[in-house]
Image (cartoon, rainbow, N blue to C red; front, side, top):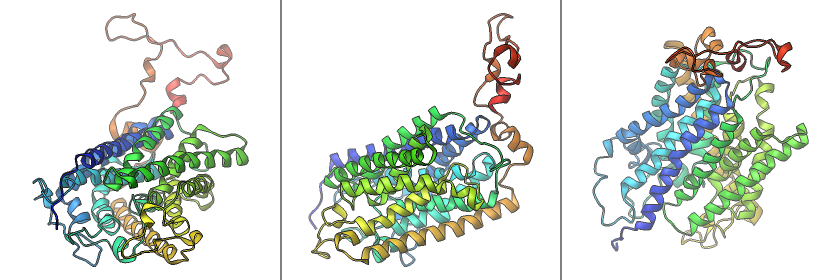
Amino acid sequence: MTPLELNSGDTAWILTSAALVLLMTPGLALFYGGMVRAKSVLNMMMMSFGALALISVLWVLYGYSIAFGNDVGLGLLGNPIEYLGLNGLMADDPEASLPAMAFVGFQAVFAIITAALISGAIADRAKFGTWMIFIGIWVTLVYFPIAHWVFAFTSDDGSVVGGWIANNLAAIDFAGGTAVHINAGAAGLALALVLGKRIGFGKEPIRPHNLTLVMIGAGLLWFGWFGFNAGSAVAADNTASVVWVNTLVATAAGTLGWLLTERIRDGKPTSLGAASGVVAGLVAITPACSSVSPVGAIIIGAIAGALCALAVGLKYKLGYDDSLDVVGVHLVAGLWGTIAIGFFLTSEAPAGAPTEETPAGLNGLFYGGGFDQLWRQVVGAVAVMVVSFVITYLIGLILEKTIGFRVDKDSELDGVDSSEHAETAYDLGTLGATRRGGLGTTTTRPAEPAEATGNGVDSKSSEEVTA
């Protein structure tokens, strides 16, 4: 084999992409944080930051090895001790075009965002300590192995063999529709069932407390997702360019699809709908971004936006409390985007281009390729969904029955920010304070009766109204 030369452009791109994907977790914290009530926003954000902290460490210790080590179980598991502590990966490899540690870092942030996504399904009612224990167990038993199924391709020199979905089934998932979104969506559903419904669910309005944060979070997710998808090309090349454009237009179409559905159904397009449509489009195009044309990407995104706008209402009909619609967006759009490859795959796209093994290229049903790719996509999607749901449900149930996963009734009513972190997001008691009374002393104007102010509300304090 001719020695490869380190490609500084590819290295710069993968490191930049890793930073973009890392930004997605704080973006998710803002997105989720704005969607909950004011008394839960810090806990919601802490669940994302907690995942970032813990999984970063676990990934280095053994997570990367389970996901990308040589296969030890028929494509189900990588060797957990092969790269223990990233042993042997720091040295410069003269036969590699990309430093191993660049790829390690890039894949680490995928593991982080996947676990953080689950938290939206159990907002307002989970113990933070149990959540941290849960995600440590969950990534070990669920995410790391499933990442091996989906992402551990055979390298050119045959040094890494694994990934039954990637290699044996030959299902296409370019950037994680199965390993990330179907996985997180199914896990979110399982935990929502274990923890049960929030107090007041379906009986009283539980509205987002800050839609500005939601919109900022959605914007950061869209920005970071270009690293998520285009970075998965692991090179600054044509594939990355095609993926970038497909990611842009599918997301735009997803936003339009959601807003149009709201306009027809409810009479008004909303900012929350726009933000949710962004995420629906991003999720749906993630597995398909290297497989379809830009027109195909628009169709996939638009359908995802409309489909998810309708799917989020299922929780009220079916009786499960998925607080922030992890199921309605990530599971539904992840399933749609993964299966849609079987319809829209084209040999003109990078993933379908002709190779020695497939001289005619790969095409989906709508491009004359028949059902071959479609059934592979369905099997891969369903397998990840079922395995993730079952294992997550068992982990969650064991934790709930032993150390407790859900907070008690009083803590939920008071707010998990206070009970779990002894903090509040907004110090509303100092609003309108003056400097009279000396250093550290504040004086607030008493709330006026509603009749005097004419604002149509009662005389409760602003903190009580917000909570």
